[in-house]
Image (cartoon, rainbow, N blue to C red; front, side, top):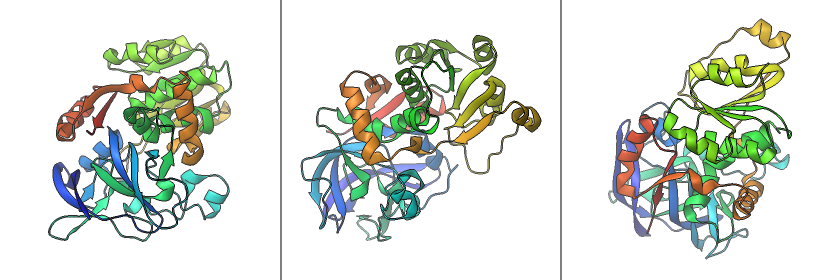
Length: 361
């Protein structure tokens, strides 16, 4: 048992840095010393009460660090390894996992924010158990995760880059490369230039798409969108529609807003595909005119975690970064400390910054 500092969510709007006790890893588990943790909109959805989650819970799901200890029967990683944490650890036994669809795993307990045995490794000094957000809890100096949730990557990848591979990059780039399988020369529109949207733009550039139109109402983000691979940056879907002639082959929504989701069909050419990446609050509904959508043979696809198998995807994306083909480091707009978390959430509410990343000493 050791003591660590961690950001704990107790109720909507209530997040505080606390000192918690952290238990050693059990069978099939890994203790990781965090190097960095991204501040993702999914964290904000919990903090703002949009997504009900068990509480108290150690926040953070976009992390990377160094393995400090392993439990019995751990084979995939060893002490000293650099790892990226997966926010959807898989059971590796269900039919979906066996078919190579780890993002559909039916045996995981990540959604309950507990380990595979249904317990948690964090607790307060009073003895009260503290959940681990989606089995990661990366907004802590150290955390314990299931073995399948710790994926080894080269030590040369900086911690803040590795952390973003764990969520934003895999979610965005994976939606382009895995879910949509965008062919070279395809026209692409990406709505939203936050961490996930910018990652989708990078994925589109990697796929050889042309043109790649970024739609972002915060004009301060246009330059960054162009820097990571967009050929055009505009402020509205209407402006994007003017650039893609009879419509785009693919349109990606990376925000989770009703108005931009509903704009997707109008951005597509006949036979085009709309891909939903952004996650809205629970209960949100969107609508569009169905007849012309069907009549023109358009498709609507949901993409979760970029359709990725983390044990395959994380090392691949890390290799692309090291080869200079995936400029993930450009997404890191602000390096902060754990005590600066409130400010990062406020900036996110104002649609500022690309990605704030907590960097641990």
